[in-house]
Length: 530
Image (cartoon, rainbow, N blue to C red; front, side):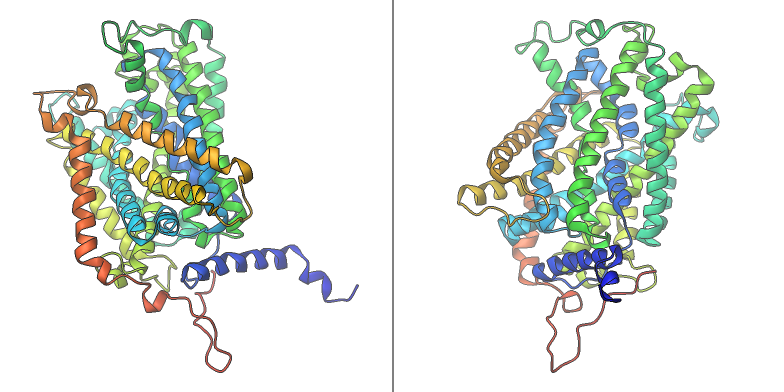
């Protein structure tokens, strides 16, 4: 063997070759590589799992599931997982072939054309900014339970004390997230990965501690419905569909692992693996936390299950000292979840802007030479997040409606990928194979993903008073808020695109991939890694 053949076949050379394959996939989409490839396997996995954020979602929404479905609502968790797994498998095929920033936008554009792509990106971007605010509000659910001193506004008993305090705590969190994301993906990834590591360790320990305090068997807890749904046309099934929103609100965002593809090493292989690992790990951890919480709580009919939620279970079952340690882990989970949500929104805004598909596209798509990240989108998303939070001070009911609608918009954005993908399959145009392929299972999985996405979108948007008009006077526009708000956002946004922005669309010159002319200068190189 020659002396120089070893390094060519070594791990570094192989990693470099695979990074070049990722750059080539970008070139095929018309983009030159600009973002720095600094993220490894765990970084991309952590991005997906922190967006889903099991500790954040379960602690924030457990009360809702129990309130409307009783302990038997647990069965919605595996139901939602099976449906979202079909979507994730479709995304894995696309992530292997097109590991690109703003994954949903670019995949919808590749599968359905530029108009479908714009609508998918617009829906996802709008929903992400609202989701950022909704996750930041979770500080209020947890921090004051750890220590009363975190209730900075009043004592919590005033009409707007909790809402105003939630805005204060959430705004501080969004400010922190904005600074971290603006200073570069490497800093964000390090903090995010450390936070996810803490979250995973805490989640496993929580499962063990709750399992050690079991007071009943699954046959008792998982069949208890509290008699909900009696006298209703659909019986308990109707109550279960409402309660299933608590699971549907959690298990999404796994596509974030691919949205960081332009900043990841070997993205064609790492992104699909990260998507599946994030979803499966989240399902298993969440399933056991919810199960053992229901088996361990002393009184399965305690009113606090529907008010204090999982925080009540942890404190009542494990005691104040141990319980508060786990609640601090929840605070960490909320923090990294906000980081991941904002990171995904930044990449999406950057991806649309470099196609000149947003106003001031050149400014939004500019990559900071110092930090190697789009700074303007980070600041803009942070500002919009704080402004959205302020709505919660005097109109918490309207904010809860908008938050619910944001989740629906994400499910619809997913459909704007899976539906065009299915139509291509039915026409005999299978996605080009990458490092991950469903093969002959592609068509049935794709059909299942579309059916699931359609059914759950309708379930989420159904005009239930308990979801869209839970308190105060009943208003028809709140009950039908999902259809009205999404209609305004989708039709209004698309009208702007159709009459104004689409005439300007096209990859901006400074971001355009250009093949090298042997007789001319080379294309400008990407910024150096740091």
